[in-house]
Length: 133
Image (cartoon, rainbow, N blue to C red):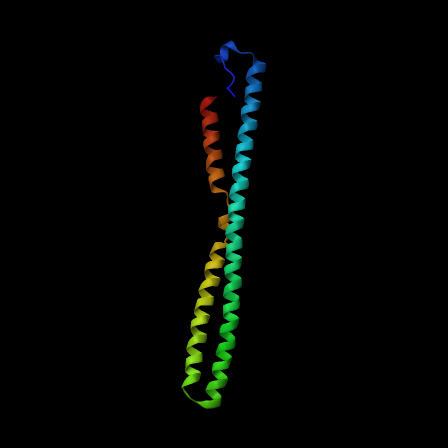
């Protein structure tokens, strides 16, 4: 579809100019709303990944707690080497779980929800509109 031919502003009526302005502003608003929807969807996916990592970290911390409790029981019951092995495994799982939760919290930060590209594009559009006026 070919864009309508526009004459010089002095050759066009006020109605034509207002019609073009409304059409251009409507198109701009639609474009910006599509961009903001895409950014919010992207942020939502990031938050979902963060929630999954927190859940995985929580499960690993629960497993670590169980292993550490088992290590304490074995240590107290036998006072021998197998308890230390269980203690090391439990500590490693606790570290991994803590790292997963920290990563998940970072991915779920509120800063990820700000539609930065949309804000930047809108400010560029405002600057361009001011230059045209």
